[in-house]
Length: 328
Image 1 (spheres, one colour):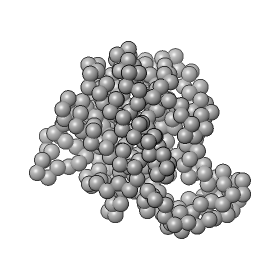
Image 2 (cartoon, helix red, strand yellow):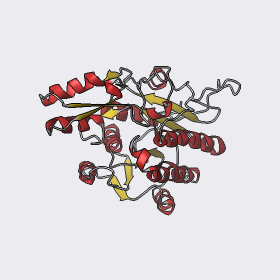
Image 3 (cartoon, helix red, strand yellow):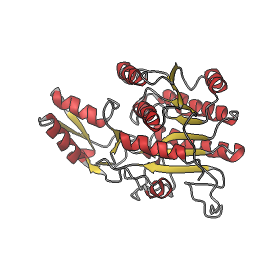
Image 4 (cartoon, helix red, strand yellow):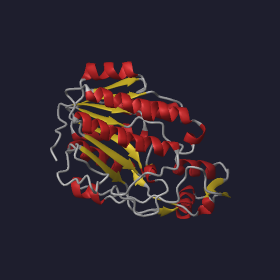
């Protein structure tokens, strides 16, 4: 794969005020101080906006970082953004997140994850300076698959939530644009990201908050679940390595026995996960130990859209990028 030298490049990061987006911007500036990073985020209130504002304040210390408040579903704004800044690299992290929220608020997922991503693809199509589009997919695309660990070689045709369906749709849309217009695209399936200043709708924060305030911890599927927790620094490092290596057509790709992780087009899919799933009850015990307090547990059945386990096969990432998430 060819390399992208980030020095003196203009990099557009969507969802820049988000957990992964803000950490990626910091990681870019660790790599090079000569890059120009344009961040866009709609600053919606899916969770406390003050947390997003704190992250942005942390990014303001970088003199070549520019923030634009806006929605990627606004096609006029995205077109103008690309025309003004002419990015070399685009990292699309903007999305409406959350599996359970997609059950009650499906419109938000269609707007951001489908219309918004379409706008990014269209802008990339007309951007002559573009070298690489990297975008966030999700481990949720594996849906009801039983084979573990989840491999990018596996079919992912059975999503169990609208969120997962939109992320699978992103992969299909990206492939179509890569095939039609030769856009190098790399999709990254993230596995349960955690770390400092993370999303408060994720289990580490939900459980700790419930324990500290004497509220019951909701334990779904009677506690029989596993999650592949991946530390934010490992996610940011994986994204950087994927940015650096531009997707290319796979000369070994066989249309009679197609590998869904690559293509005759410049298209790649990778898992980024820790590959060591943690049992839900062990995770709760760790949070209890950190809080020095036992949780009151409310045992509940499996929720619509949830999956029993996540478990990443990262062998392709290690093979192509030399990267193995290291934080347990």
